[in-house]
Every structure is written in structure tokens, then in C-alpha cells.
Amino acid sequence: MSIGELFQTDDWKNEKHVPVIEAPQSAKADEAFDVTLSVGKEIAHPNTTEHHIRWIQLFFKPDGDKFAYQIGNWEFSAHGESVKGANEGPATAEPKVSATLRLKTSGTLVASSYCNIHGLWENSTAIQIG
Image 1 (cartoon, helix red, strand yellow):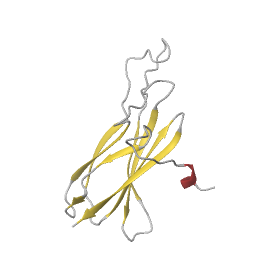
Image 2 (cartoon, rainbow, N blue to C red; image 1 turned 30 degrees about the vertical axis):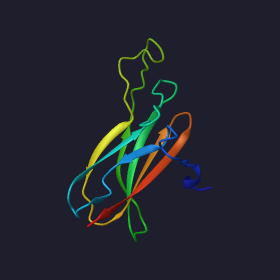
Image 3 (cartoon, rainbow, N blue to C red; image 1 turned 120 degrees about the vertical axis):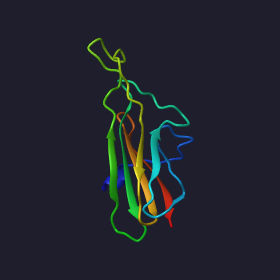
């Protein structure tokens, strides 16, 4: 078995676990642009002590390159837990992050996320660099 076989994917508009990638379809070479990643954009994902998104990762796979490059890894540590009990805590982190990138070549942005109940999920989108 390979790690890729453990990832699930679907249309994020129909499945609340799929990471959403919001990025331009094109950008100029070496010019900064923003990428936002989230889980539960169209269908809200529970964000409770018992059921939550633990992390989101972003990779970039340049066209024609064998390898992908990790852009970032974001962990969400607060899920409403406390000494008072589950979902009684004062803080809950929402599974949404933004990053600013500069790319030199076209390729594919790949996002992955992990739900503590439903496992690993992925999504990708192409970006043209000119």
C-alpha cells in the first residue's frame, strides 16, 4: 500500500472534508500572490473536541518536475477542549489559513487535510505562471 491510497477526494461543494484551494488561475513569475486553504467552505465541517480537522498542508508540483515542494503545514490545536469537559473550552481554531507565494514556473497546488474521524483528504488546482 502507498500513502496515496489512503487519501480521499471529492468535489468540495458536496463533501465537507475536502480542502478548498482559493488561488488565482494565473500569476506572473516571481510575483507574490495569496492562497487560502480551508475545510468546510460550502458544507460546514464540525469543529468539536470529538470531530475536527487537525491539520492542512500545501504542496507545489512544478510542471515537468519529478518532485513536489512543501509550501506549509498548519496545525489546529484548539478544539474546544478544557478541564471542564469536551467543547467547554474557551478557544476553537477554525480550519482556514492563508499563505503568500511566489512561483517561477507553472504547476499544480496540492492541499491535504486530516479529519480525526474521517482520515486524509486531498484536492489540487493548476496554476499558470507567465
